[in-house]
Image (tube, rainbow, N blue to C red; front, side, top):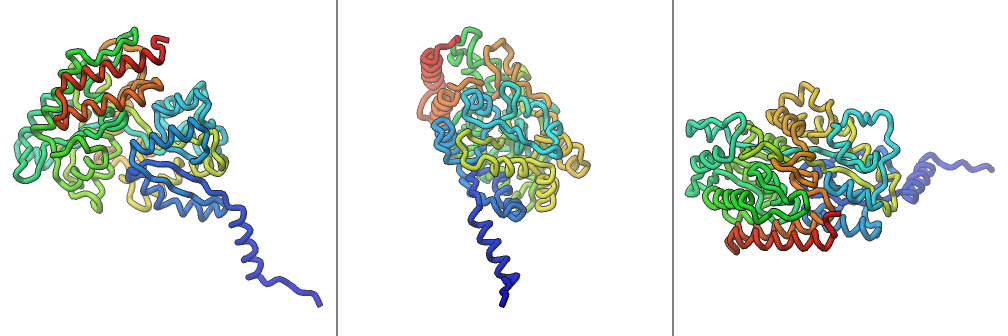
Length: 435
């Protein structure tokens, strides 16, 4: 007698087969809110791709950079997807540590992604990373608190305006601080903001012969201003505050102003997470001696290490997570104001997104940020909040540690800058600059 397999048996066999062939894609990412939302929505990708399982490694920014650099430089293959940015991508690609993003489907619409990000994530004419979100920096401030004091934010504030407004809005007896800024050390932490500060105060990292210029009056004026401002009007323990800590201070209503990443706008306007939603105003980053380099350009982007064990599956996920469809998925989940910003023209053409109070300020900041012209004087490097050479990752962090120490009262500004000048000088000399 002939026996027929039951439909249930067939389904079980198919399920076992899929599990047997399942590829695990390990993703190293930063613990920012947009990435947490991505993890939350990622089961929708796994449902459509049952042969792919996602394994998330989510850590804070400084730890991520260390682990990713170690992984891709040694070829250990621990990660299949890494989150990196405009600084690392061309450097890693030049060294042969990344796979080019070459198999993009036609409906991905690469031309829809802002050219400044495509260019920044390319090397030698090839794209090596897909931007998940893009950002510049801007001033975020409490409109209601300014109105209570009869103050008006200038269309283009200067740092002297920021000082006056911060002084007026600080009320430490009520736990209200006029301003909060990054103090946590790291080339991508406090130095991201401080890089823009020194630029607009007229300073540079190097002269045209690659001599460090950190012991100049412009650096001293910028860093002294920052430390004096934070001591007078900033929160306690500021030397430990990075993006996420300052975001918490703003959303809980404890700070009146913040100069930081434009991506924060959607988080400040999320009524489920923020006590100040609907009370915020947005303005360009302040300027001082020059507008050059006063606001940064950055993207957190997906890249696939050369040693990735599941490169094909990793690229499939990277394409999904940076697609127009993913942006719509986030809009359905949290509303249009919460979608990953700064990457696609179509997002900013969308009337629903244009309603977000920060959208226009973000677009203006991103379109006017020029990494090729970051300073008032000619410089031998590109990059606004970083110097686009491999050694910056190390010496930028050392400078950040020195300035964070001065902010914490462990050293004078003069000593911090003297030590930084010496450290940067040693780094470029050992690396053989000028090359």
